Length: 275
Image (cartoon, rainbow, N blue to C red):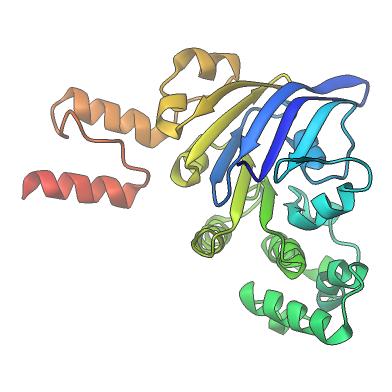
């Protein structure tokens, strides 16, 4: 049974149909890439999945049960969202106060709030920043604070809206290490992005959004090999998939080999062919 599901989901946002007739099912412990260009409806869809926005049409199901007005609070607790722009999420005067905001709103005992905050700050390597005002931090440090916000809520599902946006290479490397750790711990991750290389490295399933609708759903390799889907969504294939196709055409990799998901996997494949 999917942990989170939508049926005929639709919502108008800013006077436009941002999401229209979306059927969606998320399995537990999945790493899903929600892919599409800017303006495709991905962020609005996330706000529906998180319970911040109520759909105008259709239904959301959590563990197979419909989510109504009374259940939206539970949806917010189970599915945490990390916003693209950290400044849209951060509201408190210190890092520790920011990370404690969610657990305190759950009316948890004080010692449990303290335990969760300490764990989240340790997880994101932020203990040295706990008394700092968030507005003084760099963009990458603010992103870590917003992830710590969700970790303190102990959300089972984490929705990342363009998580690599504005990060430098070191920040991207740190982010990918966090994603790997979260996945290893059994969290269910949905990563919204228009960075095809990032999505190809991380997603075990790819869902493509265009004009508020799902136009493709499958394995990343199958989706990214579909030229018509990429054309409709104004996307390009991942660089690694293109390079692998060139190598295969020249007989430099086995004809039946699956495309590697990273440069390190490609190097290992090429080394095995030389052995």
